[in-house]
Image 1 (cartoon, rainbow, N blue to C red):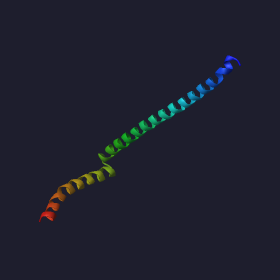
Image 2: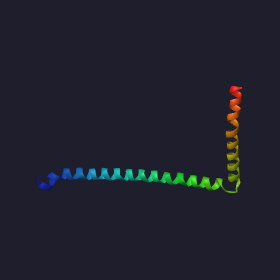
Image 3: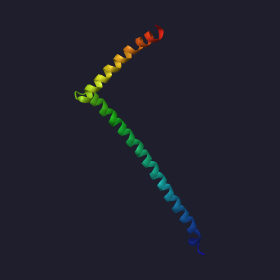
Image 4: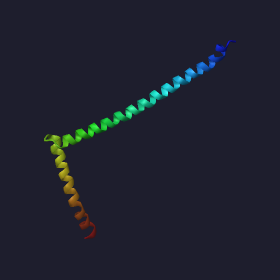
Length: 87
């Protein structure tokens, strides 16, 4: 056997390991891109919600009414609970 024939199994194994390594690195990079993409989607949704809730359209009016309802609810419930429980 020649020296090259003796090295062939080692070269084949190294090639296989290189392929496995490249596949693993591609998977890691894809996962990082997915996480970054999700972050952009969340920020986009939050920015759109904020802009829409401050506008003059229907969503802005509903959002304003909901805020006023929650303020009134937060001011009215504690005295009602004190009256109901203590008196």
